Amino acid sequence: MKSPAIQLSKLINLSFAALLASTISFSAYAAGVEFSNKAEVDVTTIKDGKKETKRVAAKKVAPDGEVIYTTTFKNTIDKPISNIMITNPVPANMLYSADSATGANTVITYSVDGGKTYDAPEKLTVAGKDGKRRPAQAADFTDIRWIYKGDLATGKSSDVGFKAKVK
Picture (cartoon, rainbow, N blue to C red):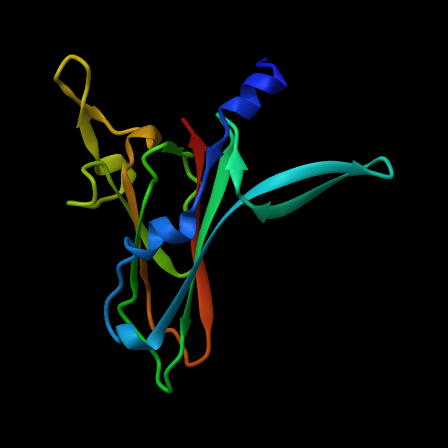
């Protein structure tokens, strides 16, 4: 295990809101969808002999630390919105945590080419060290896309998210 001094010297500063402000994409009634983003970590403490886990803003994260990225979207107009698409990159200094993408009522697809193409994980391939194609692994994912199925009613909101570890 690394000493605390080494961990502190290698902390990574995160500014998820700034990162995603320019990378979230969406379609259909864009003016009627309000987005908010957050990057958080789970912090476990022991209080009165009981473990307590709280989710707090990720300001500095040690190597191998896991960050929970969440995008909330809300319908702000007076009619249902359909065809909502949210695309988030996996930050360059992070590795996507396998099977962590979530989003109620969404179809989730992934990219291994910087967001040029998307597909289900089992259909994605990448070039291996030997140059031959191999099935993509979670660490190969560069972007995640959620397509909200159906209509998002007036005033309603939903969340999508994923976890990633610091490289």
